[in-house]
Length: 628
Image (cartoon, rainbow, N blue to C red):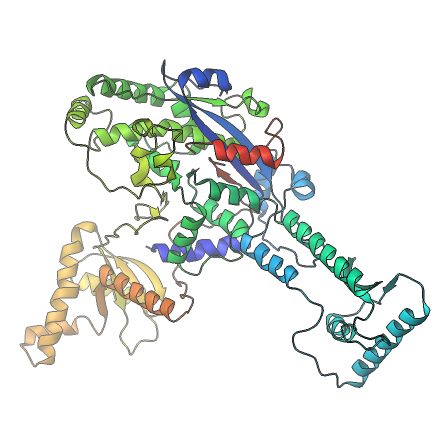
């Protein structure tokens, strides 16, 4: 019975506790039938209607690991789950490769902040520390004495100062930046920080003012290069963002949050609306969920919407593919020559790792999951387009072909669509053949499980939430806590049966009655009680007084009123700059993923042997991809 702000709060907390350990990326390029046959190797088990266009997929699988920045003592801490580690091991996950060869990453905002610090860094403290303790005064005097003697009497080019604590290091910076070593102006050395076994050590390198300036610039370049290496995988996410291509995932609500938490923001925004804005910034081409799309086609999948089931059902010979092809063929023949068919999907020639794999044989490897997601999306596009033509009726309905013929002859079906993206004007895809046109209304709709909410909208407004059979009950002011039995008796006294209770706080609950009793419950507990309370307060008839007393001081409102009040309170808190309070109730929605580091897959931009060499090949693949 939660709402999206509640579910997002739990998801954001989870994203900060766990990390991504493998990222799958498959770049799909739309090609003609002849080009498709020449471009690569067909995915094992895949087939397509004769003469249909298709896609060529370039797939990458990244092990990613948050390696500390060179010269920094800061490390990423995360939670491990024994069950998830066991599952990863059973799927052949290489933990040594993950730790020793994983591509580093860090949030782009954190990388940019550190880069600004490096470029504006100075060893001189902003505010001078006043030294007053005897031991601190002695430390500073000994430091000045040591440096003066080195400059005056030693020919050694470098003076290595003893390891000290952070406060003494601060005093050292403050002291070493002052002209007090027997020379005018520049002190005659460059102050360099060196990390040794987890300790920061200060090295003084002898040199003139010009030489010290050159060494400082070189040191900054080295630190920036080390920072860029530590943020390495973040460049991939930035390339995906800058390409403007749509992102496709399967049941990707948590995947999206984990990836953005790892590579975009060091902490996800505190509010659901802020998170939606972040998603729009990083994926301007849109976000599509094949789990949600497949759930919109129950006549094809019969409820079997796991990734492996959807991929196998659409790309391999079987009941689902046969039914889909029959429906598309019937619609095409009745729709004035409109060509509707399942596309051909192939691996790019350089992706040798995946070309000979049995269909679905590498499931749970992030790269191959990304490929399966993209292939499923490519096959879902014509099915969604067909369902739009028949006005939403099941594609297997006997009347569907006639509805398609009428739709083609008459005005196009109406429906809410999102704003056009760069894909709508991509010169590589003729507008009449743009496969994304049919799914634009599904942009940003992510699948939710164990919820009466139809979907999570990371783009556009949230869907209306109708819960007329649920009521918010508040205890009388005289009660410090609300007993479930008291609420049950209240509802049974009005002949509403035994409600299902969800505790929110010690004094508030949600009470859920059968849907058929919704109107009666509203009339008896909300509308009639409100009128009776007014009449009783005015000294009305005995019946009104008795009816008001039957509530025993409980306040009952509809879920719509409760939700509206929560939204107003959240908006007020946001305006005041406060972080919204997390709900105290036990969640009924998606359980937190118990992963040591959740694998994420994205059918857009996951790299094994045979993938395009280096970052340049990857970036080129991202720029070339047309659909996913």
